[in-house]
Image 1 (cartoon, rainbow, N blue to C red):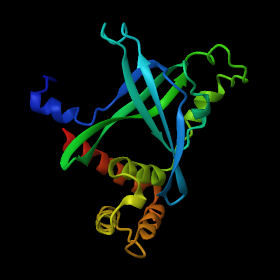
Image 2: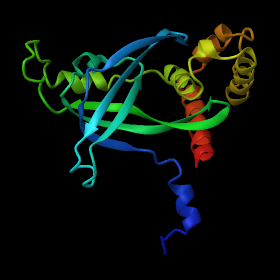
Image 3: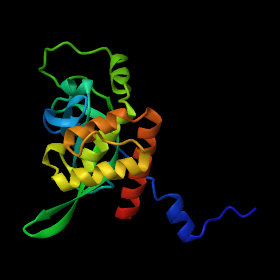
Length: 218
């Protein structure tokens, strides 16, 4: 049987492939802040950091700098210090914003998994965590309901900045996708609506949403 794909078939087959894997050094300590009302469970932790990729590893080009974000609990954040070498797995997201009256697309890099590859930079005297503790901290999964809220925040911005019309549209959209209705048309009602989803329902909505965004940006 001929397993070759036509160009159109190959494009559809790999439309959802979105993977970033890099090794680099932190150019400064990671920054941690919290976004209020990002999910019904409380404030959402946002960790941001920048990696410098060595020119030799960047196909002989100049040193590249990549900004990463991680939404949700990130226990290793306190160990992300300037100069440390880290391995990051993640994916690319895009966000449309209006700048000076024009719609522009911004590319963002999301961190899904991180592993420390070097010890704390010289001169630091703080105790180094056990190596086996770090991967376990990173592997603690968030619930599908929390991941759904995080996915919406990534694409539409902080929930508290959503307009009433946008909240109403998302409430109707989520009901159509899952059959779960909100108590009232408000941000609090929408957050409660997400929390009432079963893990299977929430994951199905995430999959549909991710697929829709992937095709939209293709």
